Image (cartoon, rainbow, N blue to C red; front, top):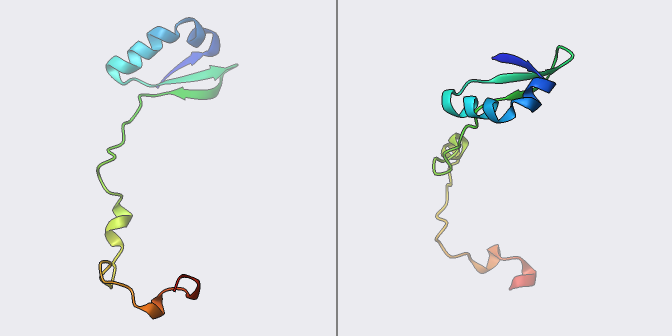
Length: 77
């Protein structure tokens, strides 16, 4: 990661973004030599891939089986 100060980041923000886009390079933005923020490429999340925890859930009953009258709360009978 390259380090740039706040003034340089403000002045060259468009070119820093272009560099991040084209080469996936990351930058650390510093104020008075102290790191303040990271400028990193965005990582897209595959929303169609199920979460790994969901594969560990086991349902021991048939969710399509109709509920009996005893299983319904009294106020809904």
